[in-house]
Image (cartoon, rainbow, N blue to C red; front, side, top):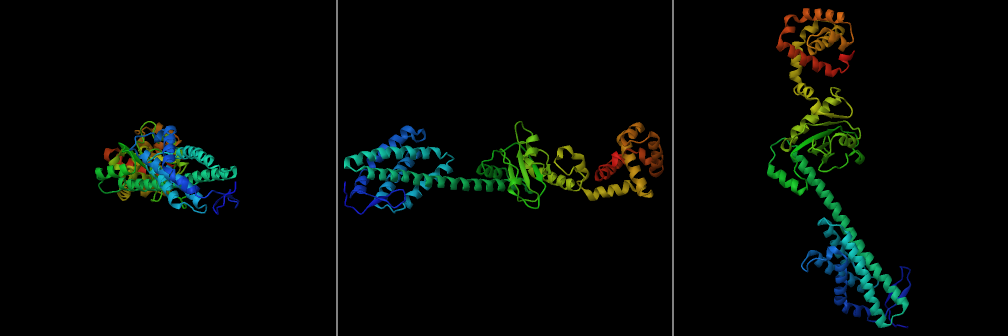
Length: 411
């Protein structure tokens, strides 16, 4: 039927206009409230999340969303070129709200689909009452689903933005928490609890801190993968990872940790109480430095718990140097080649309980060679070799020297 009106609907964006009867937008706008009632009831019936008490947040959001979507649809009829920015903004905020509340976007998107379909059925009744021809009804149907698409996209965009901001903020809070836990000064339990709560981080009883070998170019793929409760700071030097309850069953440890590091050199600090995380980082960092110098294995993952005596020896290196200079001074009287052979023989002898055959086996030499070297050592050190205090000092000094030359005892 012919309808004398300048208004119309774009058909699929190709510029084809379907004429509309005058006053259609106004007539539909007058029916918004009863239509919104029906759409709201249908959505509450089909989407469990919205079947809440009348004063619930979901109910308020649902009512506002239904009215806004219907208003956008009618506004498009009144002005096909209108963008509906304000209403799209409303759905953007609805999407953000779902994300900030920690809910899925699925319920809102389901409500949009169900509501749009039901609203279209109600619209068809109005179109039938007005006697609109099929071309106009088809154009209105296209517009209805375009409206649903617009508000759904706005909600999804708001949801994605809030999730991104929430993730970034959570990451910042966790980094601040990590900084606090490994700081050298005293840590207030109340401050830790407050930060942990804001970072959604359950407080563990024990932790271990891992120091990672730095690389010239920190790429994102080199970041250890996230695991439950793990705090990561790749910007620090060295990069560090705090692992909660590392010795607990089912936690992020053992082989899982080694795989996560992808072969990157790393030192795992001792397991300590949460308030002593700084100490774990301290020893992990020291161990990483010893790895770089070859005192500890250079590659793979080194656990401080497996190398406590080495860490103790190197905890005060100037003092260790003083000890070595004093107790090993008699070896300065021989050549460098002799010194190396006598030093390894003396350490093996002290560690084996003065057992010559054991020393020979350990060094892969003849027992007679061991006895010859021991006679030389007796001349150099005299009775000091049999003094318990001196023997302990010699073990420490020679062990530290051997750690700098890992092959010394296997030559």
